[in-house]
Length: 448
Image (cartoon, rainbow, N blue to C red; front, side):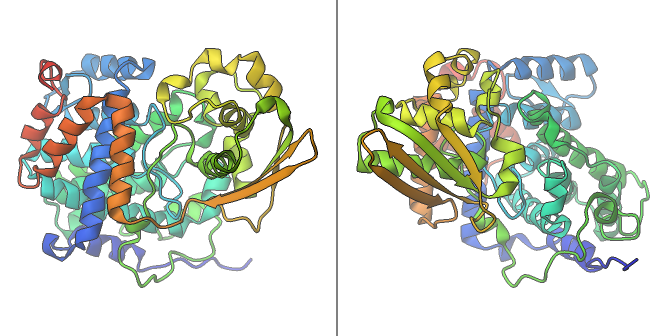
C-alpha cells in the first residue's frame, strides 16, 4: 500500500497565523472580517423566533455556570455555552457567508467563539475581528488539507475544519502561547465533528454551534495545561489521516489571506443553489417569465451538489432550502428567495410549485465549476433561453457592503442601519459594550 503523505508544516502554519501581529493584517481582509461580523449578527438577530433558537437558549439556561458572555435573545451564559447557542442560532436561517475553498460557513462557527472569548476577557472589537480573521484563515487551510473528499463522504466542514478556526480565534483572545495553542489544536483534533446527514434539520445549525463551542473548550483546556498530541492534524492517526482520503496536505499557496474569497448569501437558502438562482434571474431579466409557458427547465451543476441540494420533494420549509427543483419553481413563479420568512412548511406543500418543480431536471457536469450553474429553459412555443452564473465573479468591496446592508434591511428593517452605524464606529470599542448596544441583552431592542 502506498504511504499517504501529509503537509507536516500545516500545524506550524496555523501556529504562525495564530500569533501574527494585528498591525500586519491586510486592511481589506480586516474590512471583510468586520462585514462578516455584521452579517453574522444580522443572521443571529433575525433568527430570534426560530424553534431551534428557543431550544438552544433553554438548553444553555438549564446548564447553568458562570455567565460571562451574551446570547442572541437576551441571556447570558458561560462562554462555551454562549458560543454553542450563538453559533446554532446564527446558522438557523442558513443565510450566512460561505467560503468555497473551505467548503463551509466561516462566520457561524468562528465568530461565536471569538466574540464569547472577547467578552470574557474584555477584548477590543478590533482584537475580536483579528482573531476571527486568523481563525477563518486557519479553517480554510485545514479545509484545503482535508480536500473535497472529506465533504463528499459526508462531513460538514463548517463544523470540522471550522472547529480548528474557532480554536485559533478563541486561543488568541485567551492569550495562549505557541505551545498552548499547539495543545489546543491537538485537543480540537479529537473533538471536531459534524455530518451532512443533518442537512434539512435543526442538526445542521447545531453543527456550527458545536464548532464554536469546541473552540472555546479546547482553548480553555489548553490554557489549564491539558496536553495533547504534538500534531493532531497532520500527524500519524491525526485528523486528516482519519477523516480524509487526501494524498497530501494543504498546498503552499502564495496568497496569505485566502479569506478574501468569502462570499455572502443574498438568497436565504443553501449557497450551492445560488448560482442557479442568479442564472434564472438573468433569464428573467432578459424575458418576463410566464410559468405557464415553461415546458422544461434543465439545471446543470457540478456533481458534488447532488448530495446537498437535490431534495426532489421537500417536506418542510427547511428542506426547500436544499431543493434545486423547488427553488427553481419559486424563481419562475416570481417568489422571492431572499426573505427567510418565505421558507415555510406551507411552501413545501404548494401544489402549483410542485407542478412546476416537476418540469425541472437537474443534470451534472464535472466541468462546471462547483461555484457555477447553467440553466436552459424551453417554452411551449419552441423558443429556448440559456444563461449561466459563477459565484466567484468579483465585485468591488463597496458593492459587496451595499448588497449585504440591503440584505440586512430586508431582514431587520431600520434596525439594520442603526446596527451598521454602531459597528463601523466600534473598532476601538470593548466587546462587552458592543454586546450591550447591539441587542444581545434585554431591554435594548426597544431603543433601536
